[in-house]
Figure 1 (cartoon, helix red, strand yellow):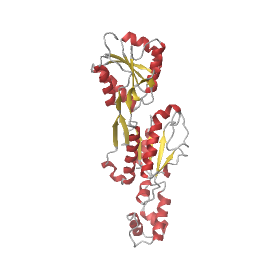
Figure 2 (cartoon, one colour):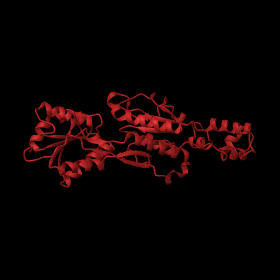
Figure 3 (tube, helix red, strand yellow):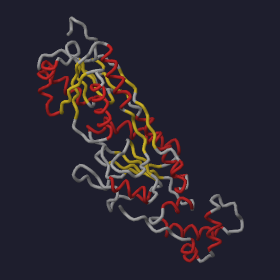
Figure 4 (cartoon, one colour):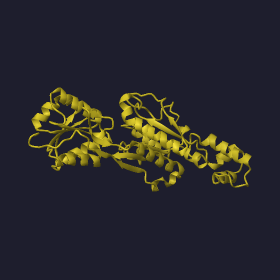
Length: 349
């Protein structure tokens, strides 16, 4: 873990500005400039000295001195603007843009750090993190050491998605996938489904584990029996469904659900008449043979708004008081019943 930067002292600021420490103290505690004892020219010298000393070394002191830029950084650990990523990141980035516009702040989208081995480094020498007053982080997986460094340096940031890469108190806004997953499974069980397959991507991320844990819990509790299948076995799904008697296949996300449906159609299996299909992810814009895919509606624009609200709270609050803030927020996705899960009857079994 990187060591915490040395704090800039009032004495150093006073020496650089050519004023007394008392004058520095007055300026620091008089952000609106209402104290007429300090001439404007003197106040400007103090703030200029503060900017020179605190710009990189101590962002907390910089904010306290009223030297914020009203710029929010946006950093993605993987490419966010590819066709595959835009399905998730597009509405989220749009929500961040709208939220920033509403508060009158600018966004700085970090792109100079190259993607290496599938990820970027927030502290790459080209990433101009310190130009911002705070940062929103996005990514399926984040670098634990970088999260720990941000926490240690008391730099305001908010991660999108629950983080468990580190034990450090990472501020985040995330989607609760456990609750809607359990609800969708129970809805399927209520209309006669008893055996199902769960197709996953094998990712070891918090959201992937939340979905998988909910599936395994339903199976262990006898609500709906599941066989877990990796995505590399999609071609085997028709055979596995026949062997297990599965009448429902649930995929980790909508793109995977479409691949599942394609494999079933290719084997002559009717969807959903013979086998129902659903996704444990956002399904807006995803259809199967003209039918609305069953799955979730994820409140991504609200997620973005909550992230910026929490970030602003951190920026405007003294870091010494952060422990008293609610820095973890969960939003629940809504179940979309769709048209791809149908009731099981004796004639369809």
